[in-house]
Image 1 (tube, helix red, strand yellow):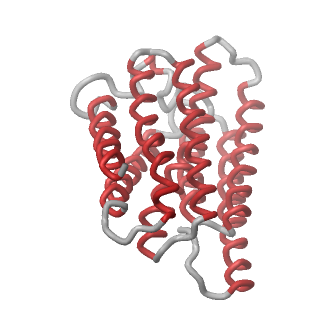
Image 2: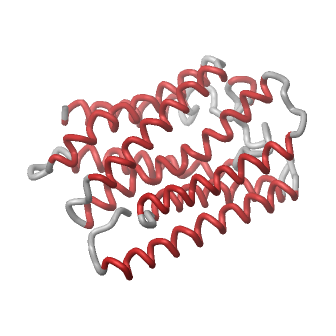
Length: 255
């Protein structure tokens, strides 16, 4: 299974490089008729937000090496299957977009989100072996989960717009941003303040705010709602983490 993790990580990175249009093919923002461009919906993050993928992919490769080293415990035995699934669902999502199947991309990203939630639960049930494990494992997949939470909102919204459902766009955007804030706080409460999911959610919401407060598709209501949502998630996570550390004392905690 360790070899499968390594191969899956390589597949995820290579397919993302090729399928994103970085070298050949059509950039994701232009594929599927531009359904996932930075100006396609009110909850689409600005372009620079997607640079977080370089950090996530680096983390996936780091994890593939880390879990292969001797001395890994039952923690990684439990994590490998869902981690492989998360690595393969990402290139599957890229393929659906390149094929112009926005509806299918929603199915794939929801499945990816479910798998990442499962990984998150497992990382909480099986505590990190060390600080390095917390950073490489919990950090990587925490960022992955947080970003996919934001990406799922954008993906579903893009699909609805592609169907011609645009009425009440501002109201819909405000509602889903409130849901994003609730999700971020829920993840923090469940994990006693895991930092990585918060960083990715705040990153995504921050760039979403930037896109609505400036650029081609401005909407101050949505932009400032995104700012408030990001602040709520950040403050709640830091507060929960500090309270947890005060209550339990120094210990190895999730990144």
